[in-house]
Structure formats: structure tokens, C-alpha cells
Image (cartoon, rainbow, N blue to C red; front, side, top):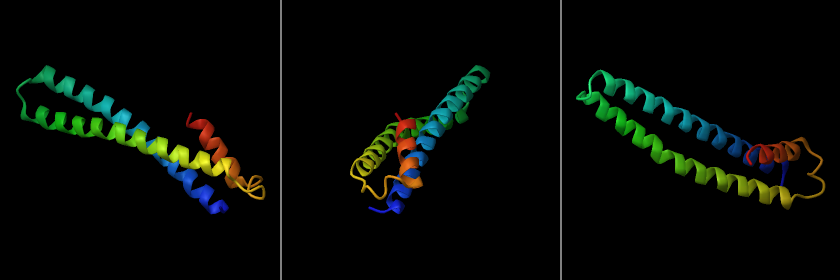
Length: 103
């Protein structure tokens, strides 16, 4: 286990956390957009397409959450089994902070 492993797994967890936030915001944005479109013209073809986009976003939310949990578990295992010489490194501290932030 090198500090590089900590760096990679920490960045994976951070990226997946950002993706989860992005998809949640995208879901809310699409729902508002569809509501406005329905209010203007409930028969519009574009509404159907926007609902398809919303469905794709909704499909991604559980997948991102599953991958985030797996990445968190990988990082937690790495931190738990860290060599004593790695525990004082900057990468180790960032990994611990990322784990705390992802709870």
C-alpha cells in the first residue's frame, strides 16, 4: 500500500460524491422544467423527451450511490489496514477526511 493508493481511492470517493450531488440537482432541475412545460402546453412532444431525460437521471441515482458506497468501503479498508509509515502522510489524512465527509 502506497500513498498513491490512498490518493487514487480518495479522489474516486470525492468524484462520486460530486456526481451524486450533480444528479440530484439535475433531477430537481428536470422536474421544474417539465412542470413549466406542462403548464404551458400539456400536449407538447418536447415534454415526452424531457421525461425521458428525467428517467435517465433517476436511473443514475441508485447506480452512483452504489458506486459511492463501494468506493467508501474500499477507502475505509485501505485506511484500516494502512502501514504505520503511511499513517503520518498527507494522503492518509486526506483519506480520513474524505471518509468523514462522506458519512
